[in-house]
Image: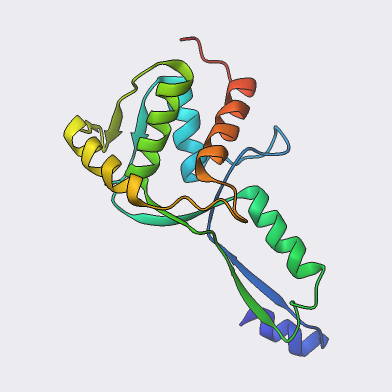
Length: 171
């Protein structure tokens, strides 16, 4: 409603972009992006050697890398797409449960650091049986590589940023 008000009052077109759950390494070190779900999970995993999920972990969310958000905004600004008070949903092809993201982070840690870190959901350790069941279902999901940054590449890039910018005393 606010955009429509200013559109009429100022006689200008408004572009509304609703962005899905973003994640990724910040451009500026001062950026406060660590409350984003995936960013928090990766940073906490690096600093504590644990994936700590503060919810049930079953909720599914669409995740989009920050670089893909920037590309989407740029595409709208630099084209004629943003006319007539347009509404755009900026999302990716990736919808995962928080537990699935935790399992992906766990598998990256195993490959990168040769560490088998635990996953905690609401302070309880996730059983290996549950991890295997969810991992099996996760393998069946397609990981598109066309226009969106692959979730594994995005997680690895984020972890590299965390590695370079945060001190972990356990390594």
